[in-house]
Length: 471
Image 1 (tube, rainbow, N blue to C red):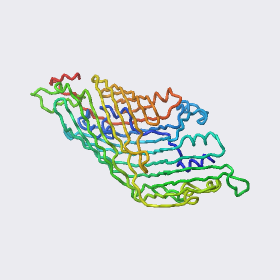
Image 2 (cartoon, one colour):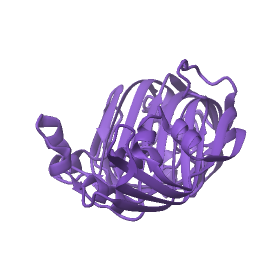
Image 3 (cartoon, rainbow, N blue to C red):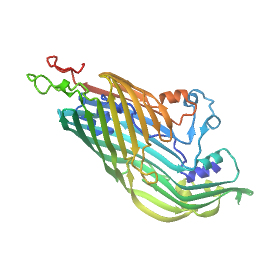
Image 4 (tube, rainbow, N blue to C red):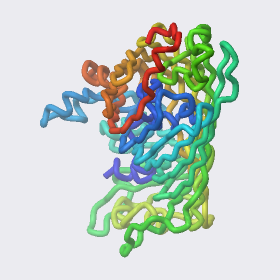
C-alpha cells in the first residue's frame, strides 16, 4: 500500500523506455520514403524512381533506473524481477517511450531536381523526468515502515497522435564537387489523447500507524506539501466514460532539412556529349562524404477541450484508508486536497529534435555512418514530448537489394547499445540493442523495428556512356 500511495503521487513512477525510430535503417541510401521522417531532403536525387512503404513499426524502451537480463526474463517463466533485476536509483531518474507506426506512404520524382512524398504515421510518446529513484527504491525494498519522500520537482507526460505529411525536396546546388539539397515537410496532426502530471516542491511523509482506522486499530497516514498539476485531454475519470478521438485536438507540424555531398569524383559521372543529359547515373551514390542537418517535429497539438487542474497537496495525516476509498488519481487530489486553479485547453508540444548525420563512403558498398539525435525540448517543460539523446556509429554494407548494418550507440538513460539490422528486398528489420540484450545481464533498454515496402529503383545508366564509377 505504501508503494501504491507513492505511485499515485508520481503518476505511475518510471516508464521503462527510449525514443528513436528505425535506428540504422534510416541512414542508408535505400531507406526511400521512410527516410523523410528524419530529413525531408533525402527524397530528392535518391536511388528510387518511386518508393511505397506499406507498413513499418518501431518500438523502443530504455531508462536509467531499472535494468535486467531481458533474454533470461523472456525464457524463464520463474524469473523474479524484484530479486534478479538491478537498480540504479538516483535523485533524478528518467525514462521515455516511443511507438512509431509508419503507414502507407510514397515518394516519387517530379524531375531530376525535385521530388515529393506523402506519408502517414501513428505515434505514441511517454516521458518521465526528475523522479527520485532513491526514495522509490527504499520504499520498494521495505527499508523502513515509515518513509519520507523529497521529490521536489518532477513531470510525466504522454500523448498519442496521428499525422499526415506532405514533403517537397529540391536540388539547390550542383556544381562540380559541391552538391546541396533541401527539403521541408508539412504535417497535419490529429491528437488521439494526452495526459500529464507535474509536481512542484513535493514532499511526502508516510507514518505506518499515523491514523485511526474506521474499523478500529490504526492505519497509515500521509502528510505532504507542494503543488501538483494534473492535465488530461478529457474527463476520463467519469464512470460512464467511453473513449472517442478528441474532437478539438488538431495541430500542424514542420520538418526541415538540408544535405551536403562532397563529390570529388564528379567528373566520372558526366555522360558523353552525344548522349542526352538525362543520363545522370541516378542509380549511383556519387559522394565521398555526405552531411545532413535537420530539425523535426516543430509544432504542437491544440487540445482546446483539455482540462488542467492545480492542487495544493499540503495536508497532514490523510489516512491510507481515505486514499484507498477513492477511485482514481483525480478523486484523490480533488477530495483530499485543495484545488487552487482550473483551466480549459492546453497545447501538447511535439518532440522537437535536432539531427546531425555524416556518411563516409569507403567503397561503393561499404559505408560508415555517424548520427546524433538531440532533443530541443527542456526536461522541465510541461505537456511536451521529448526524445532521448543518442549518438551512434554504424558501419554498413549496402547494395541495391540488400543491406546490413551494426549500430553502436550511446543512448541517454540506457547507456551503450549494440545492435544489427538488414534490408532484404521489400523487407527491413532490426534492433539497435540486439547484441546488448543477448549478452548483457543489466540491459536498460530494448527495441526493434520491422516493415515492408515496394521499391522502384533506377536501372543502370546506358552502357554507351563513359562512366568510370565502378558500376
